[in-house]
Length: 183
Length: 168
Image (cartoon, rainbow over all chains, first blue to last red; front, side, top):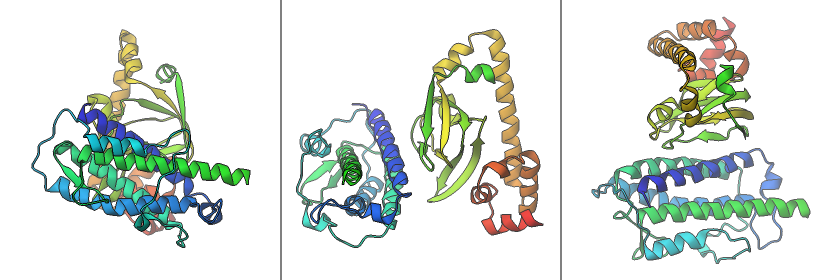
């Protein structure tokens, strides 16, 4: 796929993600912290989980983009592993449950509403990084994953992975909202 | 203006604070504001700087993207719930095939150039009081439609300064 086409679609997805998060700001804290049972996440816990990932990836990406000398390429070719990771993040119609790494699990943390602001700030940062990434290679710049520093993904795949992961948990937030209405 | 609005065959609704456009995206549409209000801003070192407003019965556009078809740094955000009529660049192009429409379009663009010049003078005016008075005189309705904190940002002054000027 063309690099610019990818960047445009990621920007558009991020725009929709921000708009969904903006909507949550108008909700009461009781709604935002409601959970179906003690093992499931509240809306704020979903966002905090995404924030934990953002805290890890965004600074890494910024660093690698700023220090890269690899010029931008017209075409982006997803890597084998990167493509798999990115695609596996997308929610399916039937719930495909995943295991959460312990250090990324916010369950039952006492979360304030400012989690939403932090999430939106991260999305604005992500927009900035997407813009900066036009000047570097989405193929050659590599980002270490949170699983292991030895496993690195192409910058383009890391963007896809993070944004699909955001989409996944915003879908989860929609489901929580539905479950709450039915409860 | 009516002829241009009638080109639209699609309407979108934005919730309060929702983004119509974010930095880096390409948006070649022209929008007519049915109801609500929006602001155009840029991020300068994570500081928002509002550069333009739109409220009901205005047109709003990311003009750089519209003209060049390239990515633009502008953000466009709804200040309150907003309903927009979308007019695509293709629809504008088809419209401009007619000679008489081109006269109309030129008028619209000329008007925009004049507005931009006014704005340029605003920005280069040193005195906050004078900046405020220029905008108040030119667009009194702005102060009915747009919350003060956004107008203060547009005028490059603190909300407190604006509030003081309004009282004096």
